[in-house]
Image (cartoon, rainbow, N blue to C red):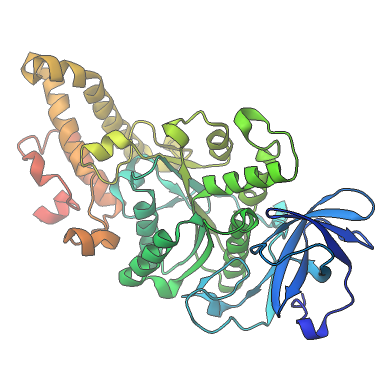
Length: 465
């Protein structure tokens, strides 16, 4: 695919701007360009890109700007780039911080303009896709035990503001780099500049930036950028999967902002809103990005997506639509965070499609169910304990509560990416160590262990050996 022509070599204009409504531009064209085609205008050698979204009649198209609109005016000539939006792809993209166009945001040299890929490419045919049925160990106890990741699958981290979604994502990226020597592609969709800057430096401090590519579409940019930056980052993930044949972790933070950008664009294009004010094309837009996240014979893309939950309402239509595409659901709870339980994963609401005896094996499944039963019984008895005290419980219930409290604290864990803030060295716990420890808790072998010895530790069995 050829690169967009420089201003000095451009072809005759294909039309001109007739209207500008915020980020929406109406262009009068001599010949209608196809949908998703990238058009552009030039102002003092600066290029303004537009993406075609609607054909209004035989001559007019409605396009969304991918830059700011200051300086655009009526009758300004518009040129055809000759292709949809595409990005330069190369193995040298690793360790870089890029924008939606593949241009550097880190002050480094531009990527070599050799090969380009269309961000709207189709997913591989079904005959080339590979089924996923294996666990991807992360070294995070509560995840590996109760809601294991699917290798080559899609995981959602659901939670309101401030419950630790981004920190958990950074730890996953650290785990992929250290445990699997894999690669991570981070899509910052609608990130605040401060958040993006902090995240970039945190990943550098954690030592995994050489295995990471970060693509940002920031909060102050056009809704067209926030809407397409996920596809741009996914294009890089597909390239790394197909060419380097490595485990690729594709991280989206936050996919809810992708839905919000689509809602803004839908309103600007004049579509009638549907359920709870969301765009009528919500299902199609989410499916367009989710259906491209899959494994082939060349390699696997495992996706982790942070999902902001508006007002902590899991019945929100956007949350429900995203949920329908996921293999693993990790619910982050404000109540857990309030108790100092980090990661603040709700062990009773989080789930994975791998949670069955056939996939996990009898031992893992039985231990996970035993842990859930203890935590569920403790949750039922919490109000009674608050009002009457633990002494009023039966001996059996008292034993369950004491073990559940220790399990709850055992499932906390210090992270490598937060070590510089907490002063506690991060730990990664193999699944087999987690299973042995939890089995010992359930069998009562740690009944004499103080609760504080369980909090923010790695493997108890490994430490005692």
